[in-house]
Length: 226
Image (cartoon, rainbow, N blue to C red; front, side):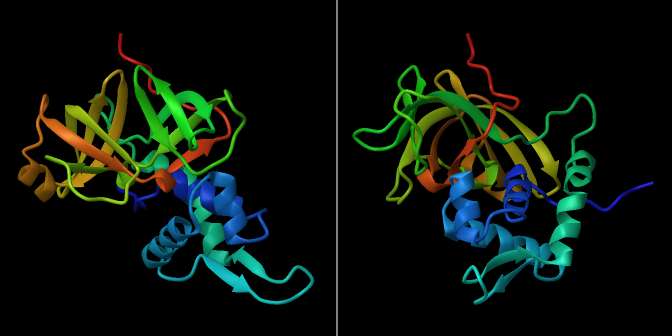
């Protein structure tokens, strides 16, 4: 028996969960360390998938309005954990996973997370100087290229493809090693062919600072390779 699945990501679930308590979308996004624009994009995406709005805007009132989950939004959130389980790859196959990394927060000259071994991530969230933090990078926010080009993304790294896995007939999951750290990206089958992606292939990764979100606690952290 087959079950319908939803292309849910951990960021989607975290955002919907945050909106159950945060007074506004801006507050929910700030809690997750993402930009409002990225939050709007994720919610619009879910509204298209679910076939209706998952959030409604409330105007005026005692607290000056805000954003609230609709009944459909609550249903999506309740089903979210099941959807993640249903979309997991069969045993023996690797599945896409959010890049989760540990580092040290630095405020100056601008907010970064020092991952160690010469790799740092530009971020937009705030933390204490020298604090150990865990960050997540959604595979869908990682752009791969064969070379450098003009981009607004603050994070640019050169890495090598470690492995590829087929997520669906039209998409691939790609693990890329940047020094001792591993990033994951989701690309279309066409892009994988055009880039000539294969183990050992040199690629350039682009990640916007707004796409790097802080995690409240460590979860399945990628371990540095020895």
